[in-house]
Image (tube, rainbow, N blue to C red; front, side):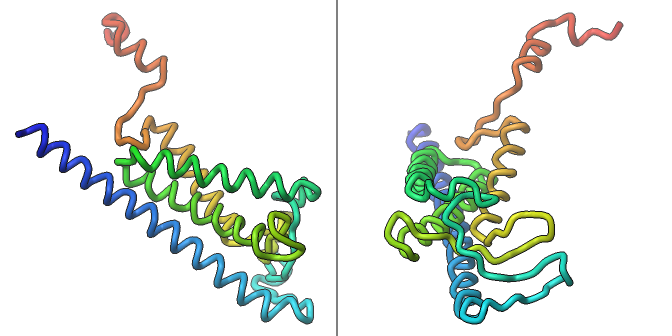
Length: 191
């Protein structure tokens, strides 16, 4: 009886974490989609530039066929496949998701990947070759969009969680050296 109750409670936690992942992904996706629709309709027709922080940060529409910093412009189909693969991997990880921070991180990654994948699928010049709409321009840096920001924030969170020893399933792992120190009884003795 006790094991069944524990299993039911664990399943409920997993469902809530998947719910968090989906809500975060949906928010990131919708914010990205709406921002792109607005800037394309307002800025693209006459190639307007809006100065947000003088010349340091501006909004201007750039159609990017490549990846960050304009790399790989002839590889649009490859980037589409990579975004689709990322979505599949996140969904596979979500099946064993019990950690709230991981749910947030994966939600950001999923929402960002979906945002840019939508551009690749539905924007010109065509399906699987669509150019991503970038519009946030920071001086001496790349032009990016909110999907890119979600991906970067999610990626940073994944790295931090990994360094802290947190796993998506709610367990934690210790680096090899910490395990060795905890297994060696002499390591804890002061000199």
